[in-house]
Length: 530
Image (cartoon, rainbow, N blue to C red; front, side, top):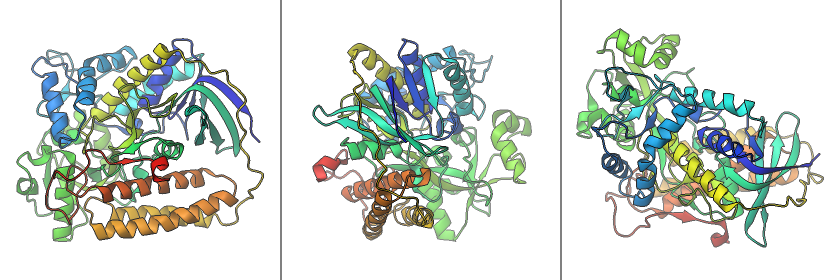
């Protein structure tokens, strides 16, 4: 069963980037459709604990924030992108306040807000809502989205593929699968905005929700978009180590407020790795933890903030305190067992500073996009900033272009040649094998041999999944698996192109950093490969 719906804009994804774009377009009387794989709340943005980085304190400056961003990105950031996004930080913060977001206050501070500091930042510039900033922001935006007369929300829906007008290299819509009723619809839209988040579910251990399967990146790549710098996968240094915690993230802000990383014997090991100690950028801290765990044969290390008062800890980190307490860990008196975990995709779909891709009418915003802001490593709390600034830039471009789609009848989804699967175990087996392989061979520390093995195995998996996809009816797991194997191959191929250690890409085979014999950006394009 398939039928067509027509909209002025189709937003694929319901994180901060997608909701912000949808609201702002809908306010101009555009007819907007948001599709989300589960509910509007199930997105990476909702789980962002730390906050949003921006210069609002007179003791800080745009130049300081730019410098910190470029240093964290190991010099691979696009300076124009950094300047543009950072310089719009204050506006981004106040646009969220205008939408009802209530950042934590501090009446003793000149700004009136409590401003914290995170790894890689030279000054305090993170506005937050305790340790549940993302949840507060998404909750406020969702309330406005569901009440908006110009917005249609399709929950339990995942885009299968984009629809292109091949004559003009223009995106005109998408095929969308509903996982509740197993129906596929065709959506025609004047503008298509990919806001699908990252791809860290490609790894066995991740801080991300189950929805982070790289769908937008994979769809864009299959359609002919440039995908760049996929080797730069950020591993968050501190994820709660507990068999039932399902990779609960321990916010960067906890280290920013004095948390100390220790071995089981109490030794503060970061002093052996970087002069910035626990406030070094995430790639450095994650590799230090990985090194110490392998050196000493540890399952985890420990993050200790118990030297702070109990009242301070509970006030500033209520979510972390409560969650850890549920696992019988009292962080006011005991250290937190932590391990690194796949967290943020720093590469993605190449866009300009309006969010435009190299396909007409197709935009990419947020974690699925690569604007040049992050370079080889993302500075903490720059992600929510990028969502708002680039979301606003995309809306401005769409309104200025005033492009018109006559909503011609598009080809309908054809599933007449496929049958119900009696081998669903293949999907779950391939899911597990792919994620374990990526964790073992394409993780925090890589080697050429590991990458070669990974590429060989992912190509075999790719063929198995392609054959399965061609013969059996769709399911949510199958669509996500098809996207994950595409993303895994992009990460591996990008890593094989980069022959030096820089930022988040670290190979035991290369001792140098930033040699003169590497591309600034690793660029992959399906059409070029063909």
